[in-house]
Length: 279
Length: 304
Image 1 (tube, chains in turn purple, cyan):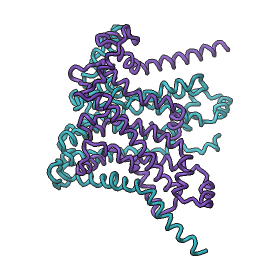
Image 2: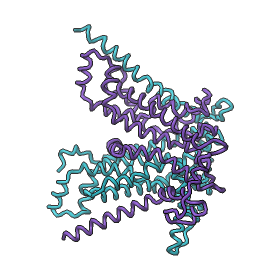
Image 3: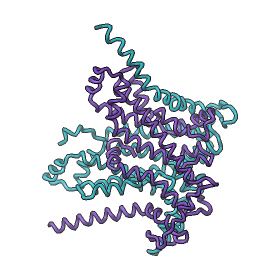
Image 4: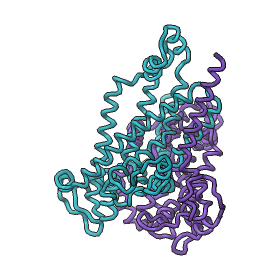
């Protein structure tokens, strides 16, 4: 009996591991391929490079049309960090009002906020483009960053509202007795206690902004403003010849920030997804 | 007593609206305003350089009466949703079930299976995907070893959609994590009790696991459908960026993008966007309406 159960367990682990390897194969192929000389990238289906080279990283880093890939990384980092800061500030302000303050039309605003969660981005896209165009903001980062400072990712507002509702109201009340205004309650009590929700918001805002190919493509044409995603897309020519080694090398690098975030906040990640349904 | 509480709500009004100000500006200028704006633009001919010109339902008439590409893009997107959503959820559920039973190293497995969800949205992965399924790509090299001559998955309009479906299914990890959390909530004594009553594993799955998991399944279903209708990056990168080969990758969002931002036919693009909202809205509404027949919201405590 015991022996049989042991076999069953081993088989199950083996199947799960084998399946996991198949899943990871494309990622590993990209990773190891970026260290293979060009002639071996496609001819050698084995993962481990027979010859190692760092040449692709040097080539890829040179970038496009005289603009280094480092520039693209800096641009992506700038946009993503500004987006994170914007979401943290604007969503927590709105969430505090919804969760703690009583004011006129609160129910109406809250219902409208919930509705915008489901709203597809595309339905506001054309007028937003026209608006940004009128402001002369095409080929700037305003269209990518400003919405985050105006709490348009309502999902995170809802996340924080639910979190703040779980914070005992006695804390606010005793702070009021001590003479704190609402602004101080927000800054001194709610924001520190909100840290887990803020972290979830920060992580997912960063990743989504980093990967947000669609809006970057629409609003950025000047290669000096290009992001990592746009840089990789421009290196890749589906019809003709791409420098595959350099392309793979830069692809690997483009995933590094996301992977670092994930590995450093792994537990938080899984809890965040499980409790909120984030992707 | 009467006069003291009164000024307070008013004061809180002002404070509250100050806190809410960024959101309010965003709501009016970037959500409600543009929504109404695109509704208006969808009733005009507008090419960005000249002012919008009112044409009533002209765009909609052209879309429904005279636009084969619209129907093509709708067909591609529907087929994608039809294949990708159930496959992704079934995979997620099966793997979650396999991982659920107090398995060792759960954390590690969960991480490995989640990583594709984390990376899958990037341009890099779409490019790699294209290479995996190319005529001389990895998959066909492997097939060749076992003597199978694989088709040119990417180049052929009949098969390229399946590679994009595959990319979506590959990212089942996030749904799996949500399923795992849902499975944890199911009390184990239910299984023990039913085992005493002689229920087999399959019966347990359909009578206990599935009903108690149905709220989570419902949530996953809604989110995956909404997300799948809006897929863009793989369509743009794995295809040739213009919908080829032979419009097989002309996803709805890609068509909208091409109309609005390659041809700058913005009135037309706005009409396309509104049709998409109505389609997604209809799907969501139907799911919500049917949900009371198959989604069970017990409060957990009445359990047995």
